[in-house]
Amino acid sequence: MITPKIIKREYKSGFKAEIILKPHFYQRFFGIIIDFGSSDPQKVAGSAHFLEHKLFAKKDGDLSAQFEEIGADVNAFTSFNETMFYCSGIEHTPKMIELLFRLVGEPYFTKQNIAKEAPIIEQELAMYQDDPMWKVNNAIMTSMFGHSNLGTEVVGTKESINQVTKQNLTKVYTENYVPTKMQFVACGDFSDNQVRTILRQVGKLQAKYLADRKAVSAPIVKPTGEFSDQALSTGGNSRAFGLGIRFENFKKVLSSSDLTQILLEIMLESKLSVMSPWFERMRKEGLLANPLQISVNYTRQGDFATIFGVSADSQRIIEEIKRVLTQPVDPNSEQYRFIKDNFVLQKKEWLARTIRTMNNLSYLAIEMIEESLDHEDLQLNLLKLQTMGFEEFDQICQKLMKDSTICSAYLNSKGEEK
Image 1 (cartoon, rainbow, N blue to C red):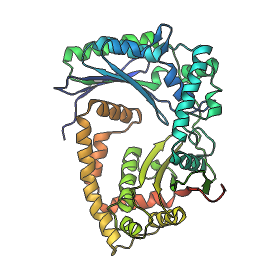
Image 2: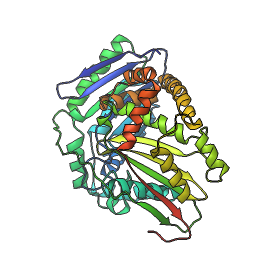
Image 3: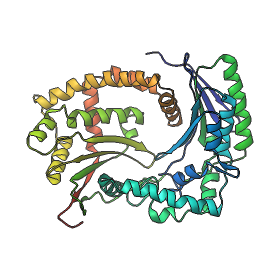
């Protein structure tokens, strides 16, 4: 696998920039990532996401229109510990970079535009809540992390959305959108002269918009919920269910949280995927018909996995999943042989997936800048994965599961919420 060349620069303010060179690509991608997301300290839940929305508002109108005028696409996202703004286009590189820094560096919050935004975000929350799986996910996250920011939907709650004001939004912005918590990334086919020009422009723009801001430190709290198994009443007939697995601490087992995440995803897929002997048995017994949705996440506030699905007998399938994840697998069983063989296949799949990522500028740039923000090394982790034997993989996963706690929730159209 050919690793792209990356040029990095750190400015006196602490702001960092990196340029990923991808020859023969016409499109160019630019982004700024902030080391702050929905789960981080903020008095009003959902403020990070609200802030992402409102930074597009400027005194002269929505900044998206100016990106459109030069033929550039612009977007943003908020995750548990990150917020990112990014754009892409073929021409007008200096203008795209200038607009991107203005986007993150020139807030325009007013009582009126904040009041106007609240109903829009409420509609976004309502859209999520229309999905039966949302109620299950919300119950699981609260069960693992209580009513903390991590245990709350990224956009917040209906109540918190309407508690956002110009004052508290400005406070969140000034404490977190600071040079030491922000990084710039560019990805595309740039000449040596273009690289130097971009880095000079970035240096000037970060000094103009960000250099006088200092980070406000806050202690990292790892919230804990009640870890209950819940039956949720519903007016519909959905048979959705879910499980949450709260891990003790990825770093206690491996130094790389990213590699740990990959190994756990491989383990969960090996045991629960549609190709596994276990799933085939569940299918024959009428408990599962469709694949499970599996996700593993690591955050400053806690590491966890979620598993979602639909079953005619949610209580029974939840117990079956708990059993297959917590009980040792017989080395002479078909399940064990499948897991061992699948580990080899999954290593090849991760290599292929990474290679495919290299040919998509936006995916590559976002992946690389997230790795940089988290002090991870994608190439090194991939090398470790490729050289890892099954026994080591199995031992790591056993250690992680040994110290984990599992909770669950399912929709019960006949019973009452417990």
